Image (cartoon, helix red, strand yellow):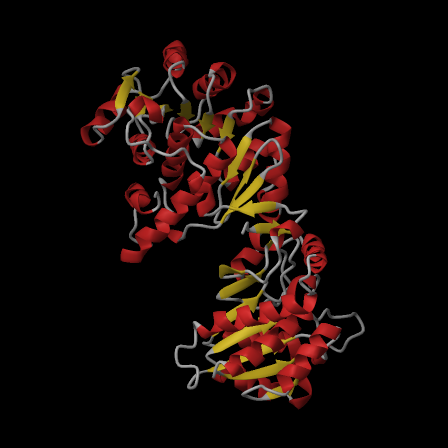
Length: 518
Protein backbone atom coordinates (compact mmCIF):
# COMPACT_ATOMS: atom_id res chain seq x y z
CA UNK A 1 0.00 0.00 0.00
CA UNK A 2 1.01 3.59 -0.61
CA UNK A 3 1.68 5.77 2.40
CA UNK A 4 0.13 9.23 2.34
CA UNK A 5 0.35 12.60 4.06
CA UNK A 6 -3.10 14.18 4.38
CA UNK A 7 -4.87 17.08 6.03
CA UNK A 8 -7.55 16.25 8.63
CA UNK A 9 -10.20 17.15 6.05
CA UNK A 10 -8.65 14.84 3.46
CA UNK A 11 -8.57 12.09 6.10
CA UNK A 12 -12.32 12.50 6.64
CA UNK A 13 -12.87 12.15 2.90
CA UNK A 14 -10.72 9.01 2.84
CA UNK A 15 -12.78 7.53 5.68
CA UNK A 16 -15.96 8.34 3.77
CA UNK A 17 -14.44 6.73 0.70
CA UNK A 18 -13.66 3.69 2.79
CA UNK A 19 -17.33 3.40 3.77
CA UNK A 20 -18.25 3.60 0.10
CA UNK A 21 -15.94 0.63 -0.45
CA UNK A 22 -17.68 -1.44 2.24
CA UNK A 23 -15.41 -0.70 5.21
CA UNK A 24 -17.45 1.09 7.87
CA UNK A 25 -16.22 3.71 10.32
CA UNK A 26 -16.90 1.19 13.10
CA UNK A 27 -14.60 -1.30 11.38
CA UNK A 28 -11.91 1.37 11.01
CA UNK A 29 -12.16 2.18 14.73
CA UNK A 30 -11.94 -1.50 15.58
CA UNK A 31 -8.85 -1.86 13.38
CA UNK A 32 -7.31 1.26 14.90
CA UNK A 33 -7.87 0.10 18.48
CA UNK A 34 -6.45 -3.35 17.78
CA UNK A 35 -3.41 -1.78 16.11
CA UNK A 36 -2.82 0.40 19.17
CA UNK A 37 -3.07 -2.65 21.44
CA UNK A 38 -0.62 -4.70 19.37
CA UNK A 39 1.76 -1.76 19.25
CA UNK A 40 1.60 -1.25 23.03
CA UNK A 41 2.25 -4.94 23.67
CA UNK A 42 5.73 -4.54 22.18
CA UNK A 43 6.50 -2.34 25.18
CA UNK A 44 4.98 -4.82 27.65
CA UNK A 45 7.24 -7.89 27.41
CA UNK A 46 5.68 -9.27 30.60
CA UNK A 47 2.11 -7.97 30.29
CA UNK A 48 0.79 -9.83 33.32
CA UNK A 49 3.33 -8.00 35.49
CA UNK A 50 3.26 -4.59 33.76
CA UNK A 51 0.56 -1.92 33.79
CA UNK A 52 -0.76 0.27 31.02
CA UNK A 53 -3.11 3.20 31.35
CA UNK A 54 -5.14 4.65 28.47
CA UNK A 55 -6.29 8.26 28.62
CA UNK A 56 -9.55 8.57 26.70
CA UNK A 57 -11.30 11.69 25.47
CA UNK A 58 -14.88 11.94 24.30
CA UNK A 59 -14.35 11.76 20.52
CA UNK A 60 -13.43 8.95 18.18
CA UNK A 61 -9.79 9.06 19.32
CA UNK A 62 -11.14 8.11 22.74
CA UNK A 63 -13.15 5.35 21.06
CA UNK A 64 -9.91 3.98 19.60
CA UNK A 65 -8.56 3.93 23.14
CA UNK A 66 -11.54 1.97 24.50
CA UNK A 67 -11.13 -0.65 21.77
CA UNK A 68 -7.41 -0.82 22.57
CA UNK A 69 -8.17 -1.34 26.27
CA UNK A 70 -10.55 -4.20 25.49
CA UNK A 71 -8.01 -5.80 23.16
CA UNK A 72 -5.11 -5.42 25.59
CA UNK A 73 -7.23 -7.04 28.30
CA UNK A 74 -7.99 -9.92 25.97
CA UNK A 75 -4.26 -10.32 25.30
CA UNK A 76 -3.57 -10.70 29.02
CA UNK A 77 -2.31 -7.24 29.89
CA UNK A 78 -3.32 -5.27 32.94
CA UNK A 79 -4.82 -2.04 31.59
CA UNK A 80 -6.56 0.84 33.36
CA UNK A 81 -8.68 3.46 31.60
CA UNK A 82 -9.08 7.11 32.58
CA UNK A 83 -12.26 8.66 31.17
CA UNK A 84 -11.37 12.32 30.74
CA UNK A 85 -14.57 13.29 28.96
CA UNK A 86 -17.94 11.64 28.47
CA UNK A 87 -18.24 9.91 25.07
CA UNK A 88 -19.63 12.43 22.59
CA UNK A 89 -19.98 10.32 19.45
CA UNK A 90 -21.99 7.18 18.84
CA UNK A 91 -18.89 5.22 17.90
CA UNK A 92 -17.12 6.29 21.08
CA UNK A 93 -20.16 5.39 23.24
CA UNK A 94 -20.38 1.92 21.70
CA UNK A 95 -16.66 1.34 22.25
CA UNK A 96 -16.95 2.59 25.84
CA UNK A 97 -19.79 0.16 26.61
CA UNK A 98 -17.83 -2.79 25.22
CA UNK A 99 -14.70 -1.73 27.11
CA UNK A 100 -16.51 -1.31 30.42
CA UNK A 101 -17.77 -4.88 30.25
CA UNK A 102 -14.39 -6.49 29.64
CA UNK A 103 -11.53 -4.34 30.93
CA UNK A 104 -8.89 -6.16 32.99
CA UNK A 105 -7.98 -3.20 35.20
CA UNK A 106 -9.84 -0.23 36.62
CA UNK A 107 -12.01 2.31 34.84
CA UNK A 108 -12.29 5.70 36.47
CA UNK A 109 -13.15 9.26 35.50
CA UNK A 110 -12.20 12.79 36.44
CA UNK A 111 -15.12 12.73 38.88
CA UNK A 112 -13.23 10.10 40.90
CA UNK A 113 -10.50 12.64 41.55
CA UNK A 114 -7.32 13.77 39.83
CA UNK A 115 -5.16 12.23 42.55
CA UNK A 116 -6.39 8.75 41.65
CA UNK A 117 -5.62 9.26 37.97
CA UNK A 118 -2.19 10.71 38.72
CA UNK A 119 -1.38 7.78 41.00
CA UNK A 120 -2.18 5.31 38.23
CA UNK A 121 -0.15 7.37 35.75
CA UNK A 122 2.92 7.38 38.02
CA UNK A 123 2.60 3.61 38.55
CA UNK A 124 2.12 2.78 34.86
CA UNK A 125 4.76 1.27 32.57
CA UNK A 126 3.01 2.52 29.43
CA UNK A 127 0.71 5.54 29.01
CA UNK A 128 -1.43 5.67 25.88
CA UNK A 129 -2.76 9.05 24.80
CA UNK A 130 -6.20 8.86 23.15
CA UNK A 131 -7.48 12.21 24.36
CA UNK A 132 -8.08 14.48 21.37
CA UNK A 133 -6.86 13.12 18.03
CA UNK A 134 -6.89 15.10 14.79
CA UNK A 135 -9.80 17.38 15.64
CA UNK A 136 -7.84 19.42 18.16
CA UNK A 137 -6.95 23.08 17.65
CA UNK A 138 -6.35 26.03 19.97
CA UNK A 139 -5.67 25.37 23.65
CA UNK A 140 -6.52 22.29 25.67
CA UNK A 141 -8.44 24.19 28.33
CA UNK A 142 -8.38 27.88 27.38
CA UNK A 143 -8.55 30.34 30.22
CA UNK A 144 -11.33 32.90 29.91
CA UNK A 145 -11.01 36.46 31.18
CA UNK A 146 -13.57 36.00 33.91
CA UNK A 147 -12.15 32.71 35.18
CA UNK A 148 -10.73 32.52 38.66
CA UNK A 149 -6.95 32.02 38.29
CA UNK A 150 -6.98 29.75 41.34
CA UNK A 151 -8.97 27.19 39.32
CA UNK A 152 -6.19 26.79 36.79
CA UNK A 153 -4.19 24.56 39.11
CA UNK A 154 -6.93 21.92 39.10
CA UNK A 155 -7.82 21.94 35.40
CA UNK A 156 -8.14 18.20 34.81
CA UNK A 157 -6.81 17.47 31.32
CA UNK A 158 -3.90 19.88 31.63
CA UNK A 159 -2.87 18.33 34.94
CA UNK A 160 -3.21 14.79 33.62
CA UNK A 161 -1.02 15.57 30.60
CA UNK A 162 1.57 17.23 32.83
CA UNK A 163 1.60 14.20 35.11
CA UNK A 164 2.05 11.94 32.08
CA UNK A 165 5.01 13.98 30.89
CA UNK A 166 6.59 13.76 34.35
CA UNK A 167 6.14 9.98 34.52
CA UNK A 168 8.94 7.51 33.82
CA UNK A 169 6.53 5.43 31.72
CA UNK A 170 6.77 4.99 27.96
CA UNK A 171 4.38 7.48 26.37
CA UNK A 172 2.48 6.51 23.22
CA UNK A 173 0.13 8.81 21.33
CA UNK A 174 -2.60 7.39 19.12
CA UNK A 175 -2.52 9.23 15.76
CA UNK A 176 -1.12 12.55 17.05
CA UNK A 177 -0.01 13.90 20.44
CA UNK A 178 -2.86 15.59 22.26
CA UNK A 179 -2.34 19.33 22.13
CA UNK A 180 -0.98 19.32 18.56
CA UNK A 181 -2.86 20.66 15.55
CA UNK A 182 -3.00 17.90 12.93
CA UNK A 183 -3.21 20.44 10.09
CA UNK A 184 -0.53 22.99 10.96
CA UNK A 185 1.68 21.25 13.52
CA UNK A 186 1.13 24.09 15.96
CA UNK A 187 0.96 23.13 19.63
CA UNK A 188 -0.92 24.26 22.71
CA UNK A 189 0.89 25.43 25.82
CA UNK A 190 0.41 21.97 27.32
CA UNK A 191 1.15 19.02 25.01
CA UNK A 192 1.43 15.27 25.55
CA UNK A 193 5.12 14.58 24.91
CA UNK A 194 5.13 11.21 23.18
CA UNK A 195 8.06 8.84 22.93
CA UNK A 196 6.21 7.11 20.09
CA UNK A 197 3.25 8.04 17.94
CA UNK A 198 1.26 5.36 16.15
CA UNK A 199 -0.19 7.17 13.16
CA UNK A 200 -3.57 5.79 12.08
CA UNK A 201 -4.19 5.24 8.37
CA UNK A 202 -2.13 8.12 6.97
CA UNK A 203 0.36 10.68 8.22
CA UNK A 204 -1.10 14.10 8.88
CA UNK A 205 0.43 17.35 7.64
CA UNK A 206 0.92 18.43 11.26
CA UNK A 207 3.34 15.53 11.82
CA UNK A 208 5.70 17.05 9.26
CA UNK A 209 5.86 20.47 10.87
CA UNK A 210 7.43 21.90 13.99
CA UNK A 211 6.69 21.84 16.89
CA UNK A 212 4.41 18.79 16.45
CA UNK A 213 7.30 16.81 14.96
CA UNK A 214 9.27 17.47 18.16
CA UNK A 215 6.46 16.20 20.42
CA UNK A 216 5.65 13.10 18.34
CA UNK A 217 8.74 11.06 19.12
CA UNK A 218 9.25 8.14 16.75
CA UNK A 219 6.51 7.85 14.12
CA UNK A 220 5.09 4.47 13.11
CA UNK A 221 2.19 3.91 10.73
CA UNK A 222 -0.74 1.53 11.28
CA UNK A 223 -2.80 0.26 8.36
CA UNK A 224 -6.39 0.47 9.60
CA UNK A 225 -8.00 -0.85 6.44
CA UNK A 226 -8.57 2.26 4.30
CA UNK A 227 -8.00 1.20 0.66
CA UNK A 228 -5.69 3.22 -1.61
CA UNK A 229 -8.58 4.19 -3.83
CA UNK A 230 -10.17 6.10 -0.94
CA UNK A 231 -7.29 8.58 -0.87
CA UNK A 232 -8.48 10.70 -3.77
CA UNK A 233 -6.84 13.80 -2.25
CA UNK A 234 -3.54 13.94 -0.39
CA UNK A 235 -0.65 16.33 0.15
CA UNK A 236 2.26 13.95 -0.36
CA UNK A 237 3.37 10.34 -0.40
CA UNK A 238 5.93 8.82 1.94
CA UNK A 239 9.11 7.46 0.38
CA UNK A 240 9.83 3.80 1.05
CA UNK A 241 11.39 0.69 -0.51
CA UNK A 242 9.07 0.98 -3.51
CA UNK A 243 11.13 3.93 -4.77
CA UNK A 244 14.31 1.84 -4.72
CA UNK A 245 12.53 -0.76 -6.84
CA UNK A 246 11.91 1.91 -9.50
CA UNK A 247 15.61 2.68 -9.96
CA UNK A 248 17.27 1.31 -13.14
CA UNK A 249 18.39 -2.29 -12.64
CA UNK A 250 21.98 -3.36 -13.15
CA UNK A 251 22.66 -6.04 -15.77
CA UNK A 252 25.12 -8.90 -15.64
CA UNK A 253 26.39 -8.07 -19.13
CA UNK A 254 27.19 -4.36 -18.98
CA UNK A 255 30.03 -1.83 -18.77
CA UNK A 256 30.70 1.48 -17.00
CA UNK A 257 29.13 3.47 -19.82
CA UNK A 258 25.78 1.88 -19.02
CA UNK A 259 25.69 3.52 -15.59
CA UNK A 260 26.18 7.18 -16.34
CA UNK A 261 28.81 9.88 -16.12
CA UNK A 262 28.71 12.39 -13.26
CA UNK A 263 30.60 15.66 -13.32
CA UNK A 264 31.07 16.83 -9.74
CA UNK A 265 32.18 20.46 -9.44
CA UNK A 266 33.11 20.62 -5.77
CA UNK A 267 35.65 21.74 -3.21
CA UNK A 268 38.00 24.63 -2.59
CA UNK A 269 41.21 25.09 -0.66
CA UNK A 270 39.21 25.43 2.58
CA UNK A 271 36.72 22.61 1.89
CA UNK A 272 38.53 19.55 0.58
CA UNK A 273 36.31 17.15 2.53
CA UNK A 274 33.11 18.20 0.78
CA UNK A 275 34.60 17.16 -2.56
CA UNK A 276 35.70 13.79 -1.17
CA UNK A 277 32.37 13.05 0.51
CA UNK A 278 30.20 13.87 -2.51
CA UNK A 279 32.44 12.00 -4.94
CA UNK A 280 32.66 8.93 -2.72
CA UNK A 281 28.88 8.81 -2.28
CA UNK A 282 28.30 8.95 -6.04
CA UNK A 283 30.69 6.05 -6.58
CA UNK A 284 29.01 4.03 -3.84
CA UNK A 285 25.55 4.21 -5.48
CA UNK A 286 27.01 2.60 -8.59
CA UNK A 287 27.67 5.50 -10.97
CA UNK A 288 29.74 4.21 -13.88
CA UNK A 289 32.10 7.17 -14.17
CA UNK A 290 32.62 10.07 -11.74
CA UNK A 291 34.83 13.07 -12.49
CA UNK A 292 35.76 15.49 -9.73
CA UNK A 293 36.30 18.96 -11.15
CA UNK A 294 38.07 21.31 -8.73
CA UNK A 295 41.18 23.31 -7.93
CA UNK A 296 44.46 21.40 -7.98
CA UNK A 297 44.90 21.35 -4.21
CA UNK A 298 41.56 19.52 -3.91
CA UNK A 299 42.01 17.01 -6.73
CA UNK A 300 45.51 16.16 -5.45
CA UNK A 301 44.29 15.60 -1.90
CA UNK A 302 41.19 13.58 -2.82
CA UNK A 303 43.02 11.35 -5.33
CA UNK A 304 45.31 10.03 -2.59
CA UNK A 305 42.49 8.01 -1.01
CA UNK A 306 39.76 7.94 -3.68
CA UNK A 307 41.21 6.00 -6.59
CA UNK A 308 38.06 5.14 -8.57
CA UNK A 309 37.26 8.71 -9.62
CA UNK A 310 38.83 10.65 -12.48
CA UNK A 311 39.91 14.25 -12.01
CA UNK A 312 39.73 17.57 -13.80
CA UNK A 313 42.13 19.95 -12.01
CA UNK A 314 41.48 23.56 -13.03
CA UNK A 315 43.83 25.98 -11.30
CA UNK A 316 46.45 26.51 -8.61
CA UNK A 317 44.24 29.12 -6.99
CA UNK A 318 42.15 28.56 -3.84
CA UNK A 319 38.76 28.62 -5.58
CA UNK A 320 37.17 27.76 -8.90
CA UNK A 321 36.85 30.87 -11.04
CA UNK A 322 34.92 31.88 -14.17
CA UNK A 323 38.03 31.80 -16.35
CA UNK A 324 37.51 28.03 -16.47
CA UNK A 325 33.82 28.14 -17.37
CA UNK A 326 34.44 26.83 -20.90
CA UNK A 327 36.39 23.86 -19.54
CA UNK A 328 33.51 23.07 -17.19
CA UNK A 329 30.83 23.41 -19.88
CA UNK A 330 32.89 21.24 -22.21
CA UNK A 331 33.14 18.51 -19.54
CA UNK A 332 29.40 18.81 -18.91
CA UNK A 333 28.67 17.93 -22.54
CA UNK A 334 29.71 14.34 -21.86
CA UNK A 335 27.95 14.08 -18.50
CA UNK A 336 24.59 12.48 -17.75
CA UNK A 337 24.33 14.58 -14.58
CA UNK A 338 26.19 17.52 -13.05
CA UNK A 339 26.57 18.34 -9.34
CA UNK A 340 27.83 21.75 -8.26
CA UNK A 341 28.26 23.51 -4.93
CA UNK A 342 29.66 21.11 -2.34
CA UNK A 343 32.40 23.11 -0.62
CA UNK A 344 33.04 25.45 -3.57
CA UNK A 345 32.76 28.64 -1.46
CA UNK A 346 30.01 31.15 -2.07
CA UNK A 347 30.95 33.81 -4.62
CA UNK A 348 29.93 35.40 -7.90
CA UNK A 349 32.18 33.08 -9.92
CA UNK A 350 30.26 30.04 -8.67
CA UNK A 351 26.99 31.87 -9.34
CA UNK A 352 27.96 32.52 -12.98
CA UNK A 353 29.15 28.94 -13.50
CA UNK A 354 25.97 27.53 -11.94
CA UNK A 355 23.68 29.74 -14.04
CA UNK A 356 25.61 28.77 -17.18
CA UNK A 357 25.17 25.07 -16.38
CA UNK A 358 21.44 25.61 -15.87
CA UNK A 359 21.29 27.27 -19.29
CA UNK A 360 23.54 24.99 -21.34
CA UNK A 361 23.79 21.55 -19.70
CA UNK A 362 21.52 19.03 -21.38
CA UNK A 363 21.26 16.79 -18.31
CA UNK A 364 20.08 17.04 -14.69
CA UNK A 365 21.94 19.74 -12.76
CA UNK A 366 22.00 19.26 -8.99
CA UNK A 367 22.79 22.40 -7.00
CA UNK A 368 23.82 22.11 -3.36
CA UNK A 369 25.38 24.15 -0.55
CA UNK A 370 27.52 27.04 -1.87
CA UNK A 371 25.96 26.64 -5.30
CA UNK A 372 22.61 27.48 -3.71
CA UNK A 373 23.98 30.34 -1.63
CA UNK A 374 25.69 31.81 -4.70
CA UNK A 375 22.56 31.88 -6.87
CA UNK A 376 20.24 33.14 -4.13
CA UNK A 377 20.63 36.79 -5.24
CA UNK A 378 19.93 35.67 -8.82
CA UNK A 379 17.01 33.39 -8.08
CA UNK A 380 14.71 34.81 -10.76
CA UNK A 381 17.27 33.90 -13.42
CA UNK A 382 16.74 30.18 -12.87
CA UNK A 383 13.05 30.20 -13.87
CA UNK A 384 13.83 29.67 -17.53
CA UNK A 385 15.29 26.17 -17.35
CA UNK A 386 14.80 22.79 -19.01
CA UNK A 387 12.97 21.23 -16.06
CA UNK A 388 16.00 19.22 -14.97
CA UNK A 389 17.30 21.49 -12.20
CA UNK A 390 17.40 19.96 -8.71
CA UNK A 391 17.98 22.10 -5.62
CA UNK A 392 18.88 20.48 -2.28
CA UNK A 393 18.77 23.21 0.39
CA UNK A 394 18.51 22.85 4.13
CA UNK A 395 16.07 25.17 5.89
CA UNK A 396 18.42 28.14 6.20
CA UNK A 397 19.54 27.88 2.57
CA UNK A 398 15.93 27.64 1.49
CA UNK A 399 15.15 30.77 3.49
CA UNK A 400 17.82 32.61 1.49
CA UNK A 401 16.48 31.25 -1.81
CA UNK A 402 12.81 31.86 -1.15
CA UNK A 403 12.95 34.96 1.02
CA UNK A 404 10.65 33.22 3.51
CA UNK A 405 11.19 33.47 7.25
CA UNK A 406 12.67 30.35 8.89
CA UNK A 407 9.76 30.11 11.32
CA UNK A 408 7.27 30.17 8.47
CA UNK A 409 9.16 27.44 6.62
CA UNK A 410 9.28 25.20 9.69
CA UNK A 411 5.50 25.52 10.11
CA UNK A 412 4.71 25.21 6.39
CA UNK A 413 7.35 22.95 4.83
CA UNK A 414 4.99 21.16 2.45
CA UNK A 415 3.24 24.28 1.18
CA UNK A 416 6.46 26.30 0.93
CA UNK A 417 8.26 23.56 -1.00
CA UNK A 418 5.33 23.02 -3.39
CA UNK A 419 4.95 26.72 -4.12
CA UNK A 420 8.66 27.25 -4.77
CA UNK A 421 9.00 24.21 -7.04
CA UNK A 422 6.11 25.35 -9.20
CA UNK A 423 7.16 29.00 -9.26
CA UNK A 424 10.75 28.33 -10.36
CA UNK A 425 10.19 25.13 -12.39
CA UNK A 426 12.65 23.18 -10.24
CA UNK A 427 12.81 19.93 -8.32
CA UNK A 428 13.32 20.76 -4.66
CA UNK A 429 14.54 18.57 -1.82
CA UNK A 430 14.05 20.62 1.35
CA UNK A 431 16.33 18.90 3.86
CA UNK A 432 15.24 18.52 7.47
CA UNK A 433 14.63 15.76 9.98
CA UNK A 434 11.64 15.01 7.72
CA UNK A 435 12.76 16.12 4.26
CA UNK A 436 10.21 17.27 1.67
CA UNK A 437 10.61 16.67 -2.06
CA UNK A 438 8.52 18.80 -4.44
CA UNK A 439 8.45 18.63 -8.23
CA UNK A 440 7.31 21.32 -10.68
CA UNK A 441 4.30 19.18 -11.64
CA UNK A 442 2.99 19.13 -8.06
CA UNK A 443 4.20 15.66 -7.05
CA UNK A 444 5.34 15.80 -3.42
CA UNK A 445 6.96 13.22 -1.16
CA UNK A 446 8.17 13.20 2.44
CA UNK A 447 11.15 11.20 3.64
CA UNK A 448 11.01 9.83 7.19
CA UNK A 449 14.14 7.66 7.10
CA UNK A 450 17.26 8.65 9.01
CA UNK A 451 18.40 9.41 12.54
CA UNK A 452 20.50 11.89 14.51
CA UNK A 453 23.72 10.45 13.07
CA UNK A 454 23.00 12.72 10.12
CA UNK A 455 23.17 15.86 12.28
CA UNK A 456 26.83 16.38 11.40
CA UNK A 457 28.81 18.50 8.97
CA UNK A 458 29.34 16.56 5.75
CA UNK A 459 25.96 14.85 5.68
CA UNK A 460 24.63 17.27 3.08
CA UNK A 461 27.61 16.67 0.79
CA UNK A 462 27.14 12.91 1.10
CA UNK A 463 23.42 13.17 0.33
CA UNK A 464 24.08 15.44 -2.66
CA UNK A 465 26.57 12.95 -4.08
CA UNK A 466 24.15 10.11 -3.51
CA UNK A 467 21.34 11.81 -5.40
CA UNK A 468 23.61 13.09 -8.17
CA UNK A 469 25.12 9.65 -8.71
CA UNK A 470 21.68 8.05 -9.00
CA UNK A 471 20.50 10.75 -11.42
CA UNK A 472 23.59 10.16 -13.57
CA UNK A 473 22.62 6.49 -13.88
CA UNK A 474 19.16 7.45 -15.13
CA UNK A 475 15.50 7.17 -14.21
CA UNK A 476 12.70 9.63 -13.55
CA UNK A 477 13.84 12.62 -11.50
CA UNK A 478 10.83 12.39 -9.14
CA UNK A 479 11.53 8.79 -8.24
CA UNK A 480 15.32 9.08 -8.21
CA UNK A 481 15.60 12.10 -5.90
CA UNK A 482 13.04 10.59 -3.53
CA UNK A 483 14.87 7.25 -3.57
CA UNK A 484 18.21 8.96 -2.91
CA UNK A 485 16.95 10.71 0.22
CA UNK A 486 15.36 7.48 1.45
CA UNK A 487 18.49 5.37 0.80
CA UNK A 488 20.70 7.88 2.62
CA UNK A 489 18.45 7.84 5.69
CA UNK A 490 18.07 4.04 5.70
CA UNK A 491 21.85 3.62 5.50
CA UNK A 492 22.19 5.78 8.62
CA UNK A 493 19.67 3.52 10.36
CA UNK A 494 21.61 0.41 9.31
CA UNK A 495 24.88 1.93 10.50
CA UNK A 496 23.27 2.62 13.88
CA UNK A 497 22.60 -1.09 14.40
CA UNK A 498 26.25 -1.74 15.18
CA UNK A 499 27.44 1.62 16.52
CA UNK A 500 26.18 4.68 18.32
CA UNK A 501 24.64 7.46 16.21
CA UNK A 502 26.95 9.77 18.15
CA UNK A 503 29.98 8.12 16.54
CA UNK A 504 28.83 7.50 12.95
CA UNK A 505 30.60 9.73 10.43
CA UNK A 506 28.98 10.93 7.17
CA UNK A 507 31.89 9.35 5.28
CA UNK A 508 30.90 5.95 6.67
CA UNK A 509 27.22 6.05 5.68
CA UNK A 510 27.72 5.05 2.00
CA UNK A 511 29.39 1.85 3.22
CA UNK A 512 25.91 0.75 4.32
CA UNK A 513 24.40 1.27 0.85
CA UNK A 514 25.23 -2.35 0.08
CA UNK A 515 22.63 -3.33 2.69
CA UNK A 516 19.96 -1.14 1.09
CA UNK A 517 20.25 -2.06 -2.58
CA UNK A 518 18.96 -5.42 -3.69
